[in-house]
Amino acid sequence: MPIPGGFAPVSKANSLSRPEAARPVLSGVSDHGAALSERALAERFNEVVLPHLGDALALARWLTGNAADAEDVVQDACIKAHAGMSGYAGGNARAWLLTIVRNTSYSWMSRNRPRGMLAVGDLGDLDDMAAAHGTSLSDEDGPEASLIAKADTAALEAAIAALPQPFRETLVLRDINGLSYREISAMLDVPMGTVMSRLARARGLLASELGRAP
Amino acid sequence: MTSHDDGLPNDPEGIRLMIHALVDGELDAAAALAVERRIAADPRLAAEHARIVALRGAVSRLPRPDVSDAFRARIAAIGMAGTEQQEPQRDTSVLPGLISVAGGGQRREAGARPPQARPSSRARRFGSFDWRAMAASIMISAVLASGATQWVMFSGAEDGFAAAVASGHRRSLLAASPIDIISSDRHTVKPWLDARIGVSPPAPDLAQDGFALIGGRVEVISGRPVPALVYRHREHLITLVAEPQQGGKITQPDDLSSGGFSMVHWSDGAFSYWAISDMERPELDDFVARFRKAAV
Image (cartoon, rainbow over all chains, first blue to last red; front, side):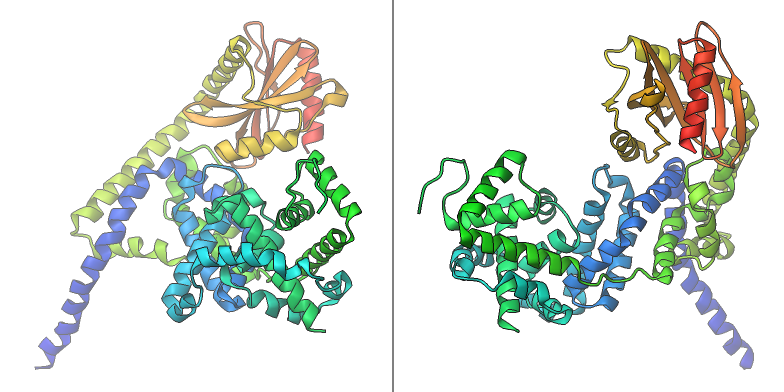
């Protein structure tokens, strides 16, 4: 009686391991086809991805809202970057990686906290808002520059976190990641004028927030 | 509102965007000058400018997230995932990439293999009756064998490489332009090469020594793209092919001149260099000596 009982788990384990095993072998075969370029790809990964991890973490931190999630997101993004390395056609490696980090951040957030995504609202409305309110906001006297310069880190971080997402990502890409308007426009797939008005709007909101807080 | 004919927008929103663009370094000199004039003439614009500058400064001073060593190692392991399982045959079958130099340490610390690398070795062990595993192992044997053959043939291949470098140089003299990227600035040439083929050799500008860097191109030798730098010395062009090298073999300059061209070959451990020109040999030696000194 104990004997058949003893066999059962073994055969179960075998039948389980087969289908699971089949997939990696197939991918292994295709890897050999690309063997020549793979070293070059790995080398490129080191040159394209590793130097920009700080920027990637900073972007993911501001898009997801906290540093612990940022590491998960950047790790996911790097796996995607590694898989897509052959699609990297040269040019600004940082912008390329950050584009992947941005997309990964949003898919990660829609997976892990779907409710947060609902708050984003319609981008078109926000841009209209940016254009309409841009003038009225700080055409009146904004806060003194010295007040902004003195703002403490926590207040500034809270103010950035409170920005509507399209404004926040534009500001972070420009002022924290240091991308050019053109790169941001390409990454977000919006016209340059939209990048400029979002950025102006984001800075306007931050300035008035910091000016209010003293 | 006073109207200006300096080409800038006249609505308050438009000029505000231009001030942001000025602070962000996005304007050309002419537009920047025009915006600065407007700012100087209007205290409200000046205040806005000061606010933007202050805000940018404050944001840029925010603490940035640390990239911990553990995190960096985890990411580096992703990069090694593809190369790892095929390491043995690749070392001999493929002429090196920089990674062998840069990645040596990482490979060891990537002992904690990323999950992608693991399943296939397990599959080879368990699935011995699986035709796919069989096919894979045949594939591996084939790659190993061809790698070994290539290894044996490599010593003989060097002459072929030199001949290819020489014909590349000759062809470049006949072409409309001997270079694909025209620049005397190594900070332009290096990224250009890097972006095209993922390799960028040292490219010191030796203009002060009489050897001006005038650009670079990509040569395809033995079926692989390799970077080539082009220097000019008086009316002579020098092509310097730099093949990424593995194994850190350092060799002294070796004369391979023939057929009216002077050619010198040497290695510095990271790259194997071929310099070729129609200059006299002593002049080329002079170039090689200066390049080696500057490239260190």
